[in-house]
Length: 80
Image (cartoon, rainbow, N blue to C red; front, side, top):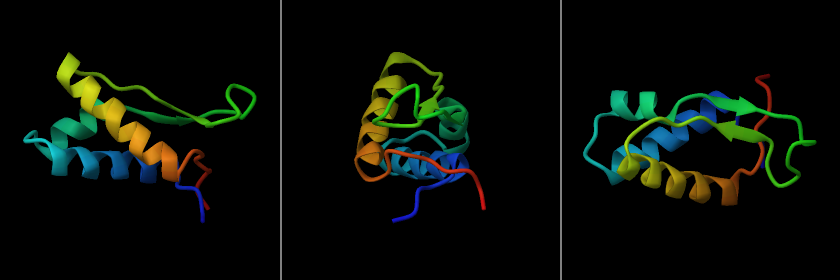
């Protein structure tokens, strides 16, 4: 299994959120925010940080989506 890039992970989160909620894709792209690749020195269970922005309900949905994706893809890689 190949780790996704930060952009791939962002796209996956947006797809999950669009399918689960009524908000438009553009809104979710903005709300998910940047997916940043970090050094494993920060956290051995994951090497990414996600910087979401939104209201409480959106943040809760994004947190659930992140947990779903984390189970399958705990790490991100740099683009090839």
